[in-house]
Length: 104
Image (cartoon, rainbow, N blue to C red; front, side, top):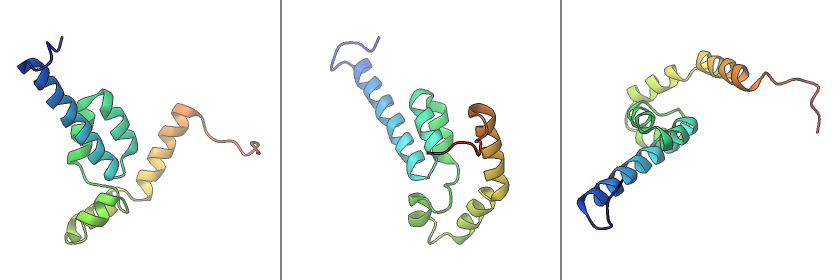
């Protein structure tokens, strides 16, 4: 229970929710959509996503890594073609591989 409105327990709950939402927004700005969405429910995921490097080309990387070339290079190496292939395999495992028979 969070307590009555205005109590210390209530304000603590509001602060935890606000911090969690802030961390989720940081994840989204870093280009980590799945981490940001899952972080709404599982707070530790939002913390990890907010701490780790941003994806190259995201708002965060463009604005925050412009003056930090080493960090930008690390992000580019981390999210290379191998990362995309691993992520695609995981998506295909969970949702099924796309087929060529589908037409609109």
